[in-house]
Image 1 (cartoon, rainbow, N blue to C red):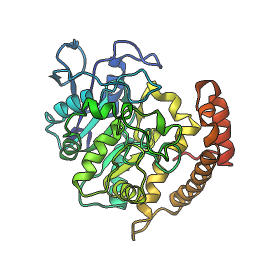
Image 2 (image 1 turned 90 degrees about the vertical axis):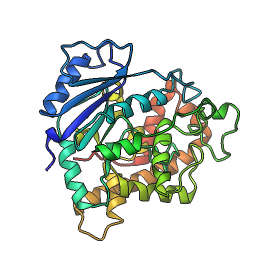
Image 3 (image 1 turned 180 degrees about the vertical axis):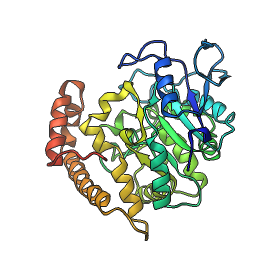
Image 4 (image 1 turned 45 degrees about the vertical axis):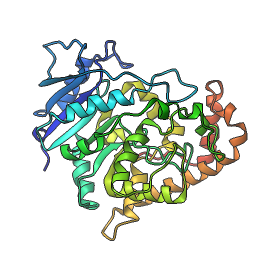
Length: 347
């Protein structure tokens, strides 16, 4: 069994200077995570100019030179692309870990309980693999067959695995300015949807990390963000079933107030690969015993997602209206109609 003392938590990034949407400070989030995993070591991997209070319950501080940001990921977004910052700070922290297992966690997030440990042990036994899986969050692990067509887009908010596996995943070269601004000088693919055409960068941040990892293992990976060729999708599904584990936040214990609205979003529940979706991928590829109740729920959800996919295709001509901030309620209502049944949550 995995004990919290076998785990080091790598908190990656700048220290939040304001309270989150729930009114909690960085210290509050840190204390909450400490309570969920008593005995775990905590490493803060941040920047050289960051002031860190000596009274914070942190075991070690790792400081790196800030590589800077890149242009916004999407044309309709004003936020900077911080992928290179994330690579530098995450890897610097992971390289200092001495325990067998590690967690990569954003500094504005926390863990409310240790459910991810139980799930990791349970489903690693049910779906055994030669190497340790990387456990991640369902939001934003994108399902490329529904709304946003981005295979190998695995969430980077929270990851848990063996330290060796996480170091392998995060050992990446930096994204170049040329790739970060790719669609400023290249046209989007002809099959691109309205959402697909919002991208500036050749590969989304999460895709860049995941495709580099998967490509080294021989998987066919996308050449650009919405490269959804059949062979790419097939490789993505095999990869997720073999190397990853996807949990919903209420299963893992992850809490990230910045994106709390996402948890209630009908659109994102369909757009993302949630636990049931991942479970079905694995169950369809195993000859061992599976949980019939879980599989039945997963199959029902798969039917819902197929209806949403068809509905999204039919509504494509008016997508700019549906997905505009002004008309978001209309888009949500149409998605609910497409689902034609209540939203399923993993228990």
